[in-house]
Amino acid sequence: MIYEFENTTDFIIEVDKIIAGKYFEHYFLIDAVSRIGHYQQEYYDSFIIGDSKNWILGFWFNGNYFLYGNDWTENQLHELRDRINFEVYQKGFHFNGTAKLITELMENINYSIFKERLYYSNSKVVKVSKKENIAELASLKYLDEITQMICEYFEDEYHGKNNKDFNKMRKETESSIKENSIWILKNEDVIVSMCSIISTPFNFPIIGSFFTKREHRNKGFGTKLMQDVTEFLKGKFDMVNLLAEKNNIESNIVFEKLNYKIVYKTNDYIIQ
Image (cartoon, rainbow, N blue to C red; front, side):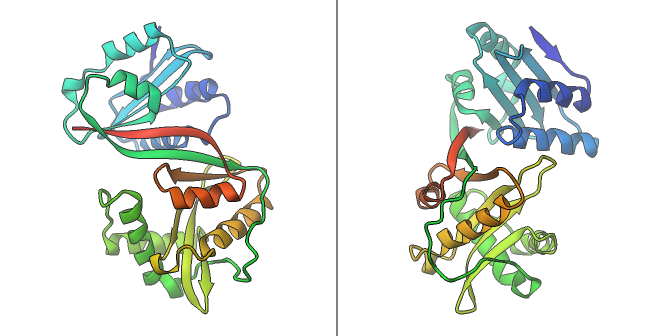
């Protein structure tokens, strides 16, 4: 059975029941629905197929379709196929969410994978770095340098498919620094590594972008930064969460050394 919703408020209430407290795993969906509801932006579809045990949920807005599922049945997948008409979605349209579900849905569709996202959680910090460098909150003194690092992060993370304009990113970076959302590690008064913290309405933080300057990699600086930031956040929260890219193997090795465990995976697909 398909449950349709006329507004984002009713939809997010039912999503909250369905996902059973797994807010981190569904963060991007919840964030998108909340922003669209808050700013009264247009969206095109919101639905839930199934019940609290076997379900598929979908949300379509502005060039993106979020699809998540849990133990869905063949009949539910058939209902989803009947609902989504791929002739509507042009080249460049994104489908985000549960990888297996979307792969099954798009088995006859030409697509490419834009991003394979890993969701890591850490309930206990393992100290592996003995470096004396100490992570610190970024200051506006380093605004341009950090902005450039974030631009390079996007180049690396998305393989040149999602490059950012420096001036636009500078404004966002300035806001993040003022909100104490960016941490840095320096060596001999030079920034060598940085990471950002995503604020959420839930009782946990999410570490987002993580970048070490190319000339300073494989020297343990990134590990020390992540160790210090994780330890700081663990002093305030029971769980620290982190978003990563599957193919960014060097960074993932750092996370796993510090006792981060993969708890969920999603993919971002683009229609070709």
